[in-house]
Length: 191
Image (cartoon, rainbow, N blue to C red):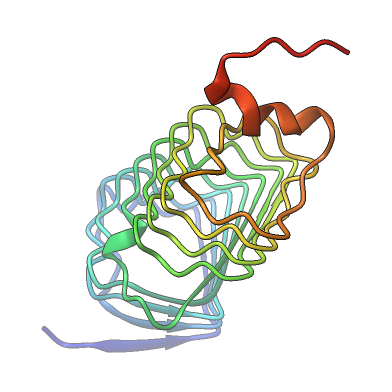
């Protein structure tokens, strides 16, 4: 398959369900209001790209490279980020919906999730060292054998993290959120 190179492109309001995105390497490109739902993005490469108000739900991400990619206001349901290339893998999310997505065994050091809904996602065996979860809803999100050292959960909510099954040394939590560290004990906590 021929590999194309695209640089400094602004791609707006395209529906890649009807038309496929040309295969290749995208550098410093902006994608606005595009629909990638169920698209096959396997082997694509995105470097220093921005996705704003896009729907990327259920897209195939096999061997995709994300190097310094920001998602803002995007719908990213059911994505398997563990299928992406492991290095480089530098991404950030703001005002996104990441429900049912999986980051299994992915290295996510210093990743930033801001004002995002991350319900029933899977971070099993992931490295979230120094990650920032800023105002995120983590309802039923799975943290198991996850490295959460120095991660910041102070403004996030609805998480359930078992300290016995995760590495949480120097992680930051707020007083109301501390309940998410104790819920496995089925105890009652009063204000």
